[in-house]
Amino acid sequence: MLPFLLALLATPTASACGGLFCDAVTMEPVDQKAERILFQMNDDGTITTFVEISYVGRADQFAWILPIPHVIDADDVATADSSMFDALEAMTSPQLTFFDSTAAARGGGLGCSEASLGFNGLPNDGSVDVVDEFTVGPFALQILRGGSAESLQTWLADNGYDLPDSAEDPLQHYIDGGMAFMGVKLIPDEVDEGPIDTLAFTYSSGAPMIPLLLTGIAAVPDMPILTYIVADGPMTPGNGYSSVDFDWEDVRTDPTGQFPTTFVPMLQDAIDDQGGHAFLLEWADNTDTVRENLPNPNVLAADKWMGRFRTYMDPEEMTIDPVWVRDPGGPMQIDRSRRIDTADSSRSSLVGVGVLPLLFAAGWYRRRRNERDGEATSS
Image (cartoon, rainbow, N blue to C red; front, side, top):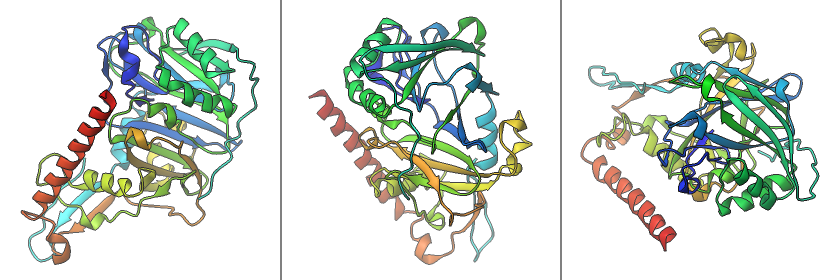
């Protein structure tokens, strides 16, 4: 689900990434464009989570452990087409057009309250219970209940999942919350070269939640997270997370050439200003506007609200699991296409020579911060 747990890659064995993907063969992190996940809130009160699967290396060396609200069975798990998230990306990603209202037009593009999560109480006698084992598509799944982080880590290590000692506190947090765990491995004979089927699983819960505490063990700086929410009406980040008030009119083409536009560094700075606990709602609309262009339209419910949220987070910011809650006053629709007038003198001053020192300084600062973090870790 979420990339990068470097600490898990000490030995070339199948590695469980605590909700993260890693490559235990090359001993390198898997670098995704973004973590991509979709939560669909169903009419019966359940939630279906769709997770993009990405890995590098041999299928028999892949393993993954994911906290889930409660025990589920084979009927609760399914697969979706591997290209589902690419199709959504093509239909929902921001498209920016720059023009100068005083000259010839020019264009460009760029291809709350805490919710009750509905956890079930589980026994806490220190033992690990393998509740169920089954296969779905290319996935071999194990449903686990762990009474303590220590016993769960021991069981995982004995069964082809490696977690660092630093995972103990996050694991205990989820155990104390009454959560179960889903172990995921790949069936080599069922995995072809190329993208793997999207994993989908359904469970009862009061709100969509991303288990970021395990991710923070060894996530990379400014890790991108892209989340889609499908619900009866507008949703907003909760449980200590806020929405970013982003000024699209300040976006320009990036003179450094690092990005197509200045959108990404500007958004990263805006999120950093809120302590990393924030998401930007980039796009929102009715699911009917995208369903028919998906590989399987029936994957999404008809006539529902759908929003696309983006954030960038550093490991030290992954201290709270984000949830999404109802937002009765939220926007029903946000167009992904935006026309940005570069003729405004107060904004156009950001373009050209004046912006270069600022952007280079920001990049230098970010690199120095990461170097200092690395030095502190090594010491």
